Amino acid sequence: MYTGLKRQLLKICIVLLTIILLNDIALMSVSGVEYYSEKPSFLPSCRIYEPGFTKCSTNSVQKLIDQLVIGIPEVLQSFGPFDPMRVRDIIFKQDNNEVATIRANLTEVVVKGFSKTKIKESRVSKKDFSWQTKMFLPKMRLDGKYKMNGRILLIPLSGSGNIFIEIENLDILMLTKTRLYEKGGFTFDNVTSVRVHLNMTRVRTHLDNLFNGRSNEVERSTNQFFNDNWRDFYEALRPLIVDTVESILLEVMSKVFNLIPANFFVEDIPTSHQLYGTKATISNVS
Ligand SMILES: *[C@@H]1O[C@H](CO)[C@@H](O)[C@H](O)[C@H]1NC(C)=O
Ligand SMILES: *[C@@H]1O[C@H](CO)[C@@H](O)[C@H](O)[C@H]1NC(C)=O
Ligand SMILES: *[C@@H]1O[C@H](CO)[C@@H](O)[C@H](O)[C@H]1NC(C)=O
Image (cartoon, rainbow, N blue to C red; front, side, top):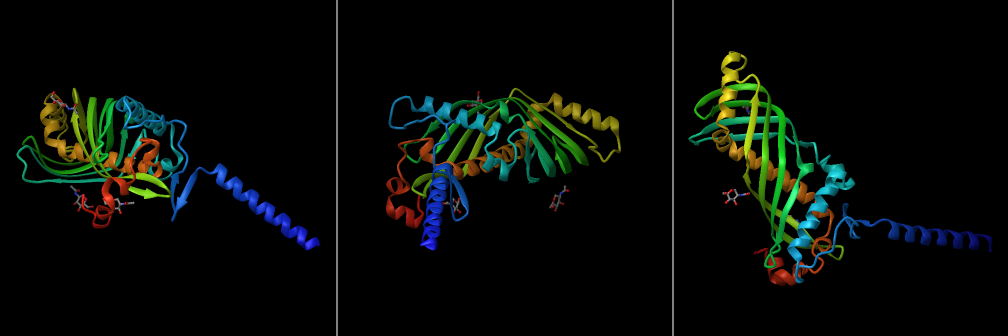
């Protein structure tokens, strides 16, 4: 009888523990990958087949950005803070270009400014659920260490040291492609590509030790030249800057959209099976 009671108590404990776990942990795990199984309270509800979706979605993405700035624990853990943001090393090679032939490595890169991101418009395609997002950042600044060899605007450069690039009034048009997939009864976005178009009103830059310290005077006048001709400087380095912004956004969004089901952004999103049909899912043809 006594052991029977003990077993009964143990059973109750297990049931209680299970209830606690199921109720309190909105974060579920499928083969070690965590995701939200309850809509976070910071996200508004939007329905794409109802009027006013774009307005709602714009607000929703703004709320997401604001929350990223505050810190989403699961994103913080694997990605780090949103602003200032540590970025992995950038290895850049650009040959056969009129304005710039350079090999550059950037390390210890920190990017500031994303916390002031203003979402101007977030559109979602009803056809393939890709997104088009218009954003504005009053200022974005990249600080790091560079190592560089090559030519920019016909000036031969060879040096290493500190670099900063500061962009003012940055308009970003972000084109995101996704593929829907199912996980734990939810539909998720697999972010497969991010393309950006950038406009700005000014780029400031400074590169230390541009000629390996051989001439401070030439270094100063070269930096001056880059700043006076910032549009040309930007055009020359555009692939580097665009690549950097695209890879940052791809990484953030992959993290976020593997964590938060697409259903919490677009409540009436079809499942991947409804959207692609069964054949397309198997053959992976889009
Ligand atoms: C950049 O890094 C790569 C790989 O680490 C290296 O092969 C290359 O020489 C570096 N380039 C410069 C300009 O230092
Ligand atoms: C950049 O400016 C051009 C010309 O004014 C405009 O067509 C384009 O849409 C702008 N792009 C962004 C990302 O603001
Ligand atoms: C997401 O897409 C990538 C290819 O872009 C693929 O390798 C990966 O398996 C996909 N993940 C899921 C969960 O569908």
